[in-house]
Amino acid sequence: MAAQPPNRPGQGSLIAEKAIVPVGVRLSTDIEYRPDRPHPYRARVRWFDPTTKRRLSLSEGKADEDEAQEWLQDIIEAAQAGLSPSLATMKLAEYGDANMNLALRGLELKTLDPYLAGWRVRVVPALGHLAVRMITNGVVDRAVQNWIVDEHSRSTVKNTIAVLVRVMEQAVRDGIIKINPARVSGWQKLYKQAEDELRDPRALALPDWDTLVQLADSLVAASYNQYRGWGDVVLFAASTAARIGEVSGCRVADIDTNEWIWTVRRQTTPAPGGLADKGTKGKRARKVPIIEEIRPLVAQRILSAGPAPDARLFTGPRGGRISTAVLRDATHWDEVVTHLGYEHLRRHDLRHTGLTWLADAGVPLHVLRRIAGHGSLTTTQRYLHPDIHKVTAAGAALSAHLSVLRAPRTLPATAVLTR
Image (cartoon, rainbow, N blue to C red; front, side):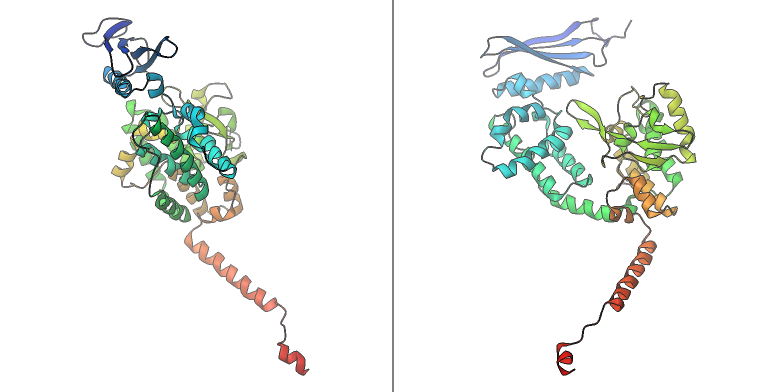
């Protein structure tokens, strides 16, 4: 029989039930304890829709009673401001789709396309699953920083922020929120900082293998139940110079254990309603070597995944998909890296680490570019050691000098006249 919380009755029992009459909306709320569910505390609110005269309800499972009470309190406060529970809990993607024409009224047609693209391609995957009332300045700041790190242009980021500002401004007018959290300032400075980091990605890399192993072990130790899979993800990502989303998208069939090659075909990214798989960032599959140090790890993961070729090689402790945010939260990443003396280190820096090590190992530039999946050779060149930069710069200087010597000489006009 499932364990019950102290002083709580059994399956399906009501913990609390009450009726509240805020301004404009009469609510009935209750919390039910259901021990057979992953989130056993079901918070529920019921009300009459004044337009349709129908009795409506919303419910959501929570891990504990405090979370359930907080969820109900948010709805009660919204109702006191005249909002129905359905509007108070509406997700950003749904709200934006329903109100986009209002939000973008007055814009010229040439402006609509980049705004709508920013909404569809960036805002909805990053924030669409959140309730409008749950979006804060901090949430928007992190989303903007992720867009910058993904190397979107300034104009792209600007248009993406602009459409988010307009949708959230409509939410202010509708009374869902009081202040527009999308009016972020200083993102241009974040952009410059990201550009500076991308100019010198070597500065973001871990120094050696032992440091990487120490990081992986420390993250495992800090996680709930010390789940070893988090360490495997970190070791695999750095060793293959891959993005966390690409590691999450890796399937058993993508691994060739004869040649020890990983064919990177997809990545897992945020999407409305959760995480979804899509093609790689460069839209092309690429092949990455699996080094000897992680082959036992990979072999064990394949064995654990089972015979199905589409089985994921790396999952969370409950079999769920992994994202950079999931890895961060599950391992207390920020606290761990700060304790180890690498305050700057982000999940994406595992990729910087792998590419830096490959460059230092003498991998030819054109091969390194294919492994990285870079569209531009200039991006790959940033991983070369500074001494190599000096050598190539010297070669470029010599070429420039020789081209001047080879250029045909022209006589001055006065010389032509005197001949």
